[in-house]
View 1: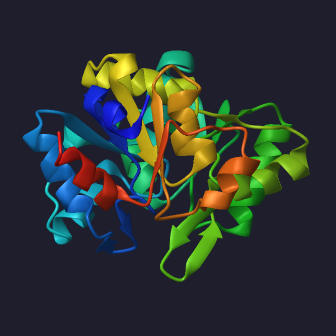
View 2: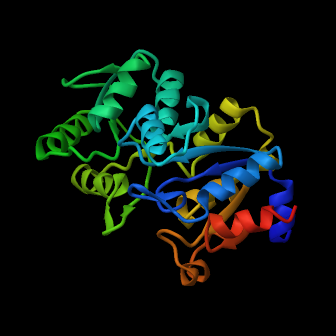
Length: 265
């Protein structure tokens, strides 16, 4: 399928945020044009970020400050997927969360039983408030039998000043210490796709995941029956494609180029 046909067929675009729609506090050129073209054509979009350090409401406020206004149903996070997973597979169980106050608030608001003592489950998020004590507790609890879960496997988070360690890097330290690997539920895993479909009612084959990372954004689509588009505005570079085992359905420089093609439909 060529690029234009793929855009024509897509009814729901699942957009990454960091490195795709914005960098830090600046919307990437052409991103708003893309949203306008999606709306014009009667298609839909939702934002989905693997970045779990902010709550959905905080992301809504952040976007509003950049003059992008969305509703709660248009923003999904890896934190949301983890909450859904815990309710389904570990209902009522105690959870030790390594995460920001924002993520803790989201968990508590959704009835997750958080504890500082020996839990049944340890959940690792992208924690900008990470301390040695948190790492120590997580490792101790996992060694003592707690299940090891994590919101997403991203290794680095893009910023205007370069890349900083993300959830996957934090999990690597814990895995090296404990000898145990986490179960991830964010992109690119099936739990994320199932959650998106449940929340949007979209048809799988008409969903396209768009993002700047091959191993999360693009892989989510191509490995789970949807589509995956790579944009070169963030982490991945064109030379990374040949070395990857993930083959994008299409590659664009950014959302601006996608908007220009949509305009011709």
